[in-house]
Image (cartoon, rainbow, N blue to C red; front, top):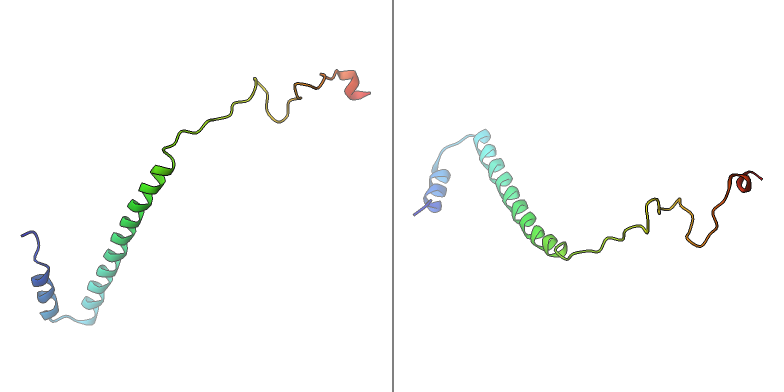
Length: 86
């Protein structure tokens, strides 16, 4: 139908080749197998990651502008310049 694997394999095995050609064929086959397996592994991991990140998460916003780690707390009194120096 699409590709006759058995005939292609029989033709490859019946063919006379030197060591260099054999190593080229084997290297291409190994790289192809590694590539296909890596592709399948990434696709399977992508499904689990997309399910993990599909839940909406709440983002905690600061209380006001400048309300980060360096600002004073809401219950503390603001300091004047004289209190800091003296």
